Image 1 (tube, rainbow over the protein chains, first blue to last red):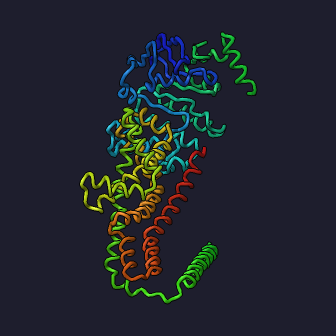
Image 2 (cartoon, chains in turn green, red; image 1 turned 180 degrees about the vertical axis):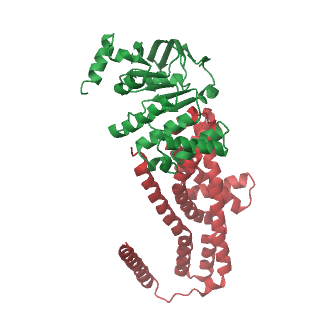
Image 3 (cartoon, rainbow over the protein chains, first blue to last red; image 1 turned 90 degrees about the vertical axis):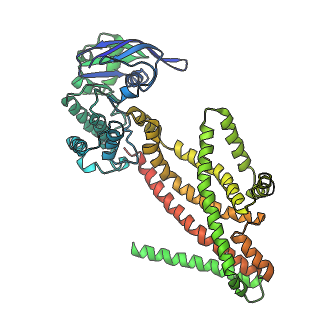
Length: 242
Length: 256
């Protein structure tokens, strides 16, 4: 992926949540955004997704400028995995995916169906694909939502704290699924609290605090942070790990 | 399991018998002569037609009120505040006025002013406008009850506004409005009785007419009660069943 952000600022009312963000990276597969809650990382991800307007600056993803106005065409090429799986509550796992492919991407042939079923198999959801979201576990739901993002064959997949509402066992299950995404050669940006996972999977890490980028670089910055803030953050996050 | 159902059935039968006994006792004490339904048998066609009219009246009113409710809901949600206030004032007046008063005003004044002579249609319109105010709140509750993330996901994955309503919101709303709608239908049927005050030939009015020529009042009231129960009791039972299902679903909704 190629991501360029220049002088980006974002306000909610009078509260500034992002201030003067600059990012310029290319030839990346996995980018990880880390930071404490309220640091602005999820907001940044939502802006990259074209879900919310912003006040100043510019965002360019793979050469496409995400300007103000109608971004619906842009969003069709972006896969998004929400913090809570956000599956449509009244549809089975399979139908959740087929609905989007049919209505948005006009793919409703048997090949598409077979492709989706094989993806679901790949992510271990074969026996659950006809169940409703409330009939499966949180980990299974989140994996289904990863398949949904993958099935539209997007240019980029964005994951917003995909494991933060799961217990450790389910977290492991979902992280394994995300790893599979990487193996599928998909470009993605992940907002996560799982520092160990970020270190393991990310090509590039961006650390944020109070709406600003404090430190960024290859995942080596997680082993040898240069700024006091990142060092302090990592000390806290990793304080009880063996 | 089987034993439990048996036990429940016996308890139900006993409770029912207790009520029947109580009503029978009251009737014997209140009416010191033998019941005689022969006059009602003579007029059964008229009464039956009245009963059918009540069903028609309630059914049409409810159908129309679904539309009225939708229009009111859209007006309340509208960005044009004139529409918002039109709807809010309508709802406030309806919520604050007995249906009987609304029926009288609608028939004797509004119907008259607009030259609507058909008692039936004035009745249908009155009930629809009245029930519609409540229905708009049912819609509001159901739509607001749908989690924000369903809208957000639809937007993110590129569904248009129409597609979002058609494939995501509406199917979920439909499920959650069925129980309150069934309840509202029972209320509509009961409310239609008040239209007898504007001399609509519905069920209550036809029985009352027979009562007044025969002076067989208690028998008439029993027929009235049974006539309404035939319509409302199944609805109440349906509502109970719906509610049980919805509750079950909500309990498991956010299980992680």
